[in-house]
Image 1 (tube, rainbow, N blue to C red):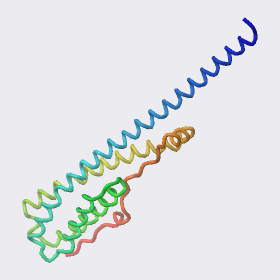
Image 2 (image 1 turned 90 degrees about the vertical axis):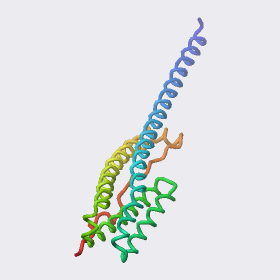
Image 3 (image 1 turned 180 degrees about the vertical axis):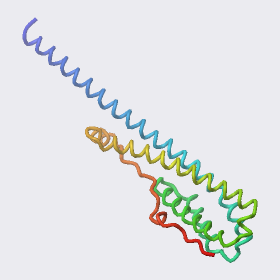
Image 4 (image 1 turned 60 degrees about the vertical axis):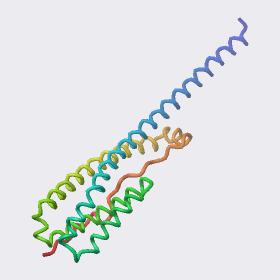
Length: 191
């Protein structure tokens, strides 16, 4: 074997090893991003499942309160409008914003309820309130799981050299489900 031919074979073998290594690297990173992205989608589906449960409970809660709190139309209209915005939200950030508005409206509704002792002792209202409280707890758990999945994905997308692979394949950081600023202040209950 001549020296030229041997050099060519060594060069071809090195090139093949480098190409295979690059292929394996990009394939592994791409598949990792796909797995993390699917984890976010699965977590978000669980959040939406609980949000839908709350969405379905609200009309019953509003109707129960209406019978007792006729003069509290403004708050009831606000809850109904916030629920409608949730139903019309399309993207994940729009859904997050609409659900944050709904949470605020529900907090104000529950403050109004404090003014009506008969309503607070009504069996239907108590059952709905318990269902809503349980749903809110489930939402909090699923939001936490969603945010954990987003954090894991975002860290992977931003780390070097992953960020180069993410940019090539169009993987972008995902949005967290954040509480609105109004959630940091407790509602006032006045008798």
